[in-house]
Image 1 (cartoon, helix red, strand yellow):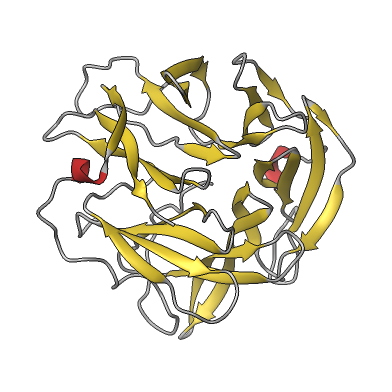
Image 2 (spheres, helix red, strand yellow):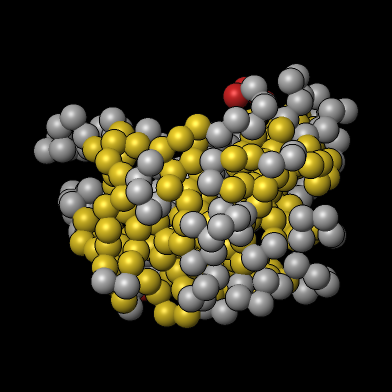
Length: 323
């Protein structure tokens, strides 16, 4: 799923996530990694897992010696295998992928209408029948392709919709309406795994006479009851980075990561999708932002721990199991 950007946040009127981060910790970020996967010379934020598929991207730069590094010109895409990392594709246009398998069990990655075959590195364009400007997000789960379609001109009364279609290779089956999002909300990000869905949404709201944007995550079974979490009011003040990571092995809880620029730690929240229980909280010693995801198959976090000082590289690896 796409990370929530960093606009501004007000700390009133809603159960927000701004003042709940840990105090500074002395341990290094690398201590969160118990199983290293790859030493990287450049940073990575494009981590994706789903249906046992594990992938990440590394940036390509016109001048990799420049400090600080500029924005990447393109990305190389990697996957984890039983013998170690494997380079799948070079020069792909984006770092933001969602992982899964098609109807035949083949490992694939999707990013908007782009489909990448992990076995061959072939990149194709899917025909979703939706204008690019209205396509909110796309995700894949065991042969089911989910995608959010936003209104052409979103207002407080329009609906975004979630649709699903069978994905067999690059063939898209019949597109079916799964559900409508609440009025006024648009879909900005999407995660699908284990017959569970998490949609990042945003909507315009008025709080204390001031207009702002309410960002939240709605999660649950595709057609069942959804629970709202990760509520952030974008209005004024510093804002934490909030990322939906994935679902637990029993598929009963959602894991999310919260961090900000003022603390060197990352808060991991585990929220049951049913009931009224509050999230349980653990903390990582490092601040990871988008360099973090969760693999339901192994119940571990995949994370990128930056090196010390001005070194843009670091270590990609696994945490201890987190169920």
